[in-house]
Image (cartoon, rainbow, N blue to C red):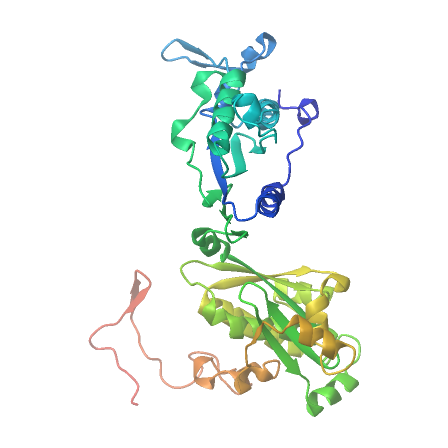
Length: 407
């Protein structure tokens, strides 16, 4: 029963079909309100009776009570239940779509079939508000549910009224404005996973945050151009380091704006596989990359996020690619067009070259100083601070007569 290869082949229409229906109605019935309604089937999966040879797989016992339980219906969560129910949901839609106002009311001359859309047990109708078309479409949906699954299938609580603004399948449809948007609560939830896109070239770098339409852009100066020329292999200011610099700048520039109620997962997309590996492992043999990893790790701890890098083919990273080369043709024109409605986030001077020794970018007072070769081991010089001591609960206990060193 859980073998997916034996499940019915169900093809669901894309939700864009609803949007196309709205546009079509507004085009044909100019000036006429277009309205939308939704409904679903009560306990949809409970309407599917199991074949006799399968019932035994839906049985259980409570030995202590001497009870045998046999489920005669297909429960929700069974591997194939959505596919099997899809056949019944599709049948409801088929019945609605074969009806029209004229077939429901002989006094009406409207022969255009009703529009119906289903996603498993959710049903959506979109119709122009002309004559009694809305009322008859509603009745067609109810009668179709009744014919396929019986009177218990009609869920009065989930059958909405006809509206021009309605949340359907997790999206907010506005038929007057012809817009589809995501509810604010879903946007807030989606912020838990932020995607940024980046690219670095010999000219500069760019980091994009599409969720806020903001970007970071840096043009490498003369000093960095000399570092690029001297870089060789895996050392120096090579392409891997420059790509990882994108991550560090994004962490400190965008980080303060990311929500702090819980740890946010940031997915950074790059076409440089080495930068992806170095950032995910926070490890590299390149000294510049090591300092960048320290900066990235500190930003994550301060602002409460975790950055993971993913590989993205360069051919799919058009905007970031143009942004990192925006000072030379033909990229300057392409970048200008793509970023016209975006906001640039300035990089603070203290972070501009964060790949330099870590402590030069962050206050020395925050970090322990490295011990020199002349630093003696603990207890290797001076008088011992305490004697005849005992340790309780991990804390050192000293007697009142314990001598102490003078300051």
